[in-house]
Length: 85
Image (cartoon, rainbow, N blue to C red; front, side, top):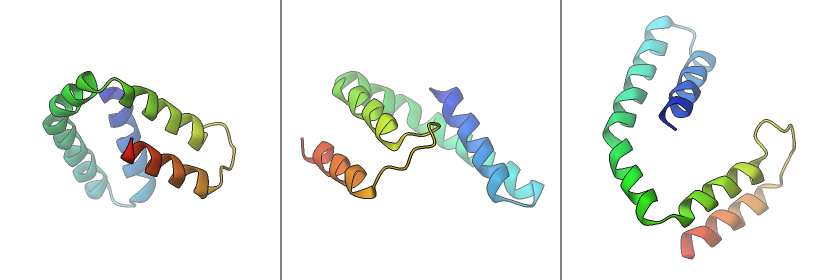
């Protein structure tokens, strides 16, 4: 999971910045945040296994990589539903 997040951070930093210094700072900050929050996040997911299903559902709903457009209302409804359940 950390590998996917770090690759996503690198791709985002490269895509958003024009200067190499900003890209390096963004990657370092992202790695520091991952190192700090990976253990608490891991404990939270272990204590609440339904979060894995909710996360997978969001990935499917968003359709990342499938070149599909999902109306924002569906995403907002799913986020609201998962927040209150």
